Length: 234
Image (cartoon, rainbow, N blue to C red; front, side):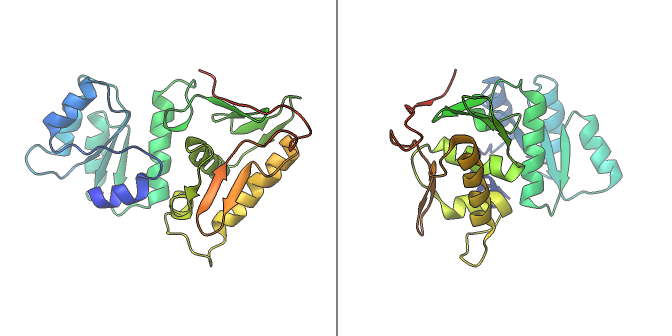
């Protein structure tokens, strides 16, 4: 299960694995955990007991993962304070969506995905992660889809550096990149069109053949002669 979670979540989340309930509780007390994924069937202290002890001392978002799918098992998990209950086998996009929802409910709307500030301004365009919009200096706005937002967040975290095709593909559909699967290319194309509309330039998303994509600043003169900067408001 650890290997599986590493493969499907590592591209977007910083993961840490606890070897015991005691180790997990210690990390939570130190405020170093934003969300907990907790298996129910564990050797020694079971997940429900760990969840109950966590909830007695912390409001950290908590999702139980279990092969037990009966209504009684789910009810028990939710009654001890879990925010959600995911049954095995699960689909990666569904788990990710439930994690994002749990984080959104728990955190004020001052932060963007994975700890980023809510707003990112690049080349005169402001991305608002929570309203899923990009707005230019004149106030014109375009709406982003959930997939476009996920891609943009992944590119923004590595500003100026190419993000691997496999990472972006797994983020979109949980699969390794394939030249036969045009899903990633289509979403990048849609993003570029929206940047073209709102910023007058689609080259803010650069492609590196066979490697990946990068979000980058545009050189002076490329964007209607306006000075270009990248800033992340605190």
